[in-house]
Every structure is written in C-alpha cells, then in structure tokens.
Length: 335
Image: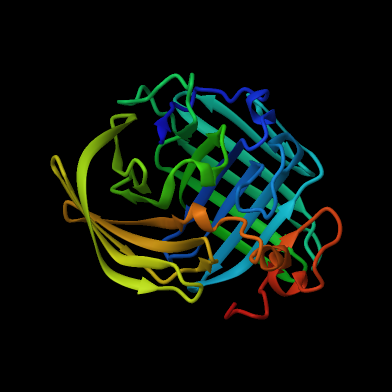
C-alpha cells in the first residue's frame, strides 16, 4: 500500500498524465516556540474538489501557524506547473534544489496571489542526504510511493502579504508522495502519519487502517532511514467538530524503542483531514513535529464540494466567501 523510495528515484512526468494519478511535495518547519508552516506543491492534489489529470491541475497549499492558531492559510490552483531534476516552477513561484557535499539544499521563492494581495518571500532549506534505506524499492511498479527527501534539516522563512509578515527559523522535514491511482481507491480507510525530530534525528510514523493495515516507523540513523517493526496502541480518543475521531496519544513499541506521541488540538481541520502539532518522547528523549489524519473515503463527496470551493482559490469563478478563508489572519478563526 505504501512503497518506500529513496530520494534519488525520479518521477516520470508521463506517469502523471494518467487520469487519477497525483504527486505532491511536502515541506514543513517548526521552531522552538511551536510556531511553523507547512507548504505543499502538487499536481492533482487529492484534497481539491473535483478530478482531473495531474498535468492539468498544479496547485499550492501554504499554512502558517503562530501562537497555536492558523495565521495564514491558502489553497490555490495554479495556471502552470513543471518540474525537473533542478526543481519546480509553480505559477510565479520557483523551487530550486541541489546537492553538495552530502547536503540537500532547497530555495523556495514564493509569489502567489491571494484575495488580500500577493504573498511573497523565501524559504531556505538545508538537510542531510539520505543513503540506501532498508526496504526501499526502485519505484518500478509502485502504485503509491513515499520518498523522504532528506534527513532532519533546518529552514528559514520570510514571508509577506500586505501588512502581514512572518519570520521563522527551525527544524524542518521534506518528503514526496506520488500515486498512479486516486487516493480513495487504495483501500485506505484511515491514514495517520507524523514526524518529529529527536536529538537531531528524524522520526517518521505511518499508521494505516484498511484492506492492508500496517504500522510503520522509520528512524534516521547514520545517514539513512531504518524501519523498525512496531506495535501501536491509541488512547484519549476525541471527536473533532467535523466528525473525525482522533487519538490524543499514540503508544508505539518496537525493537529497542519506546515512543510516546502526544497530538495537540488540530490547527487545520476539515471533514476528511486534521493537522496537529505533536510532541514525541523516544526512549525518554523529547522532540516535536507535525502529524496528520486523512480519511480518503470522505474526499470529494458531492455535498462537501461547495464548502471546499469556498476555501479554494481557483483560476476563475471563485466563491464570494473566499476572502474569509484565504490569506493572512482569516477573520473567522473558529471555522
């Protein structure tokens, strides 16, 4: 259900022309105060209402969190998107990457329209290269491939939109997902994942329920991600305002590890996903990061489309309610 691929595996653009396929690249940042951001650039992002070939649906999602709230939120379609080994061009924004002396570098230069004016700025990312990983495949025949793009890294962000601005400096994480089938056709009923950095090392967990349930945990060790066989118990169940059930605590035991994950209240939410700040304690050592819950069966339901469209900036025909939800400091903070 989830194939682990090394960062060196490239996506064939021809594969993404298949109807129902998708790909997204993910970057997050978390500083010592618990503030941070999540940036996703994608083709045929499954969380957009409606369907279509990925080559025709580039998009970008940016969320900035401060003082325990979403201070800036934007989900936008883009007119044009392309990628190569050197990086991506998404609308007017560019993502340039390179590897030097065992370190992966990414420079993001953002320039995106919002209902309140363009958001512009830069995000600089540096992290260690990852070598051969246990259980990784070459990508051939993969239906759903996940690829961490580097180990635990560091990022600095400076963003502006009108009178709003933010500067962040903290630990960061990058990965990539691509799939040749729609997300809601993979037999996944619930998908819980998260990442944390503990003592400068990356820790990632994937907990999947459905036709082929699995619990997978990866730990950065000596320049690679090692998978650890684990057992998981969840506690402190809560129901979010849109009906999704989530667990405050994940107890994960494996070969040589005792991992306790505490998920904070969701900072982004919807009928099919939640995003949490998380705290992790690995063998008594603390760390922090982000976690998410996705329920694919609830994606793109007809009754939900009007509500998703209210929050999505389209190339044309935007909802009159879009300014309430997109850009800096949405006034309806309770939604």
